[in-house]
Image (cartoon, rainbow, N blue to C red; front, side, top):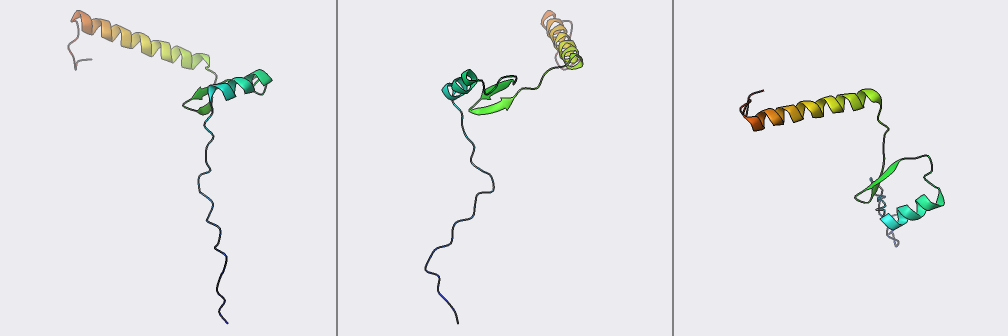
Length: 86
Protein backbone atom coordinates (compact mmCIF):
# COMPACT_ATOMS: atom_id res chain seq x y z
CA UNK A 1 0.00 0.00 0.00
CA UNK A 2 1.52 3.42 -0.98
CA UNK A 3 2.38 5.87 1.79
CA UNK A 4 2.63 9.67 1.41
CA UNK A 5 5.65 11.41 2.94
CA UNK A 6 4.71 14.18 5.32
CA UNK A 7 8.28 15.27 6.15
CA UNK A 8 10.50 16.76 3.46
CA UNK A 9 13.82 14.92 3.07
CA UNK A 10 17.00 16.73 4.07
CA UNK A 11 18.84 18.42 1.20
CA UNK A 12 22.04 16.64 0.11
CA UNK A 13 25.30 17.81 1.65
CA UNK A 14 27.41 20.07 -0.58
CA UNK A 15 30.25 18.33 -2.42
CA UNK A 16 32.73 21.05 -1.46
CA UNK A 17 32.57 22.11 2.20
CA UNK A 18 32.39 25.85 2.88
CA UNK A 19 35.73 27.52 3.54
CA UNK A 20 36.57 29.78 6.45
CA UNK A 21 37.78 33.23 5.40
CA UNK A 22 40.30 34.37 8.03
CA UNK A 23 40.91 37.96 9.09
CA UNK A 24 44.15 39.55 10.26
CA UNK A 25 42.73 39.92 13.77
CA UNK A 26 41.86 36.22 13.99
CA UNK A 27 45.32 35.23 12.74
CA UNK A 28 47.02 37.59 15.18
CA UNK A 29 45.03 36.08 18.06
CA UNK A 30 46.00 32.54 17.05
CA UNK A 31 49.63 33.54 16.57
CA UNK A 32 49.84 35.17 20.00
CA UNK A 33 48.34 32.06 21.61
CA UNK A 34 51.18 29.96 20.18
CA UNK A 35 49.02 27.77 17.93
CA UNK A 36 51.33 28.31 14.97
CA UNK A 37 54.69 27.92 16.68
CA UNK A 38 57.24 26.26 14.40
CA UNK A 39 55.05 26.86 11.32
CA UNK A 40 55.34 29.35 8.50
CA UNK A 41 51.84 30.32 7.41
CA UNK A 42 50.79 33.21 5.20
CA UNK A 43 47.36 34.86 5.02
CA UNK A 44 46.40 35.50 1.38
CA UNK A 45 42.91 36.73 0.48
CA UNK A 46 41.45 35.22 3.65
CA UNK A 47 43.06 31.80 3.15
CA UNK A 48 45.89 30.36 5.22
CA UNK A 49 48.70 29.10 2.99
CA UNK A 50 51.52 26.96 4.34
CA UNK A 51 54.81 28.36 3.04
CA UNK A 52 57.39 25.86 1.87
CA UNK A 53 61.01 26.38 2.73
CA UNK A 54 63.46 27.26 -0.03
CA UNK A 55 66.45 25.03 -0.57
CA UNK A 56 69.74 26.14 -2.10
CA UNK A 57 69.26 24.76 -5.68
CA UNK A 58 65.95 26.61 -6.04
CA UNK A 59 67.44 29.87 -4.78
CA UNK A 60 70.40 29.51 -7.17
CA UNK A 61 68.09 28.86 -10.15
CA UNK A 62 65.93 31.86 -9.27
CA UNK A 63 68.96 34.16 -8.98
CA UNK A 64 70.35 32.95 -12.32
CA UNK A 65 66.99 33.56 -13.99
CA UNK A 66 66.70 37.04 -12.48
CA UNK A 67 70.24 37.95 -13.61
CA UNK A 68 69.52 36.72 -17.15
CA UNK A 69 66.29 38.74 -17.32
CA UNK A 70 68.05 41.84 -15.99
CA UNK A 71 70.89 41.54 -18.52
CA UNK A 72 68.41 41.11 -21.40
CA UNK A 73 66.45 44.15 -20.24
CA UNK A 74 69.68 46.19 -20.06
CA UNK A 75 70.72 45.06 -23.55
CA UNK A 76 67.27 45.88 -24.91
CA UNK A 77 67.36 49.34 -23.31
CA UNK A 78 70.84 50.00 -24.74
CA UNK A 79 69.72 48.97 -28.23
CA UNK A 80 72.03 45.93 -28.46
CA UNK A 81 69.07 43.58 -28.93
CA UNK A 82 65.97 44.33 -30.96
CA UNK A 83 62.60 43.19 -29.62
CA UNK A 84 61.76 39.65 -30.68
CA UNK A 85 65.45 38.72 -30.94
CA UNK A 86 67.08 36.62 -28.20
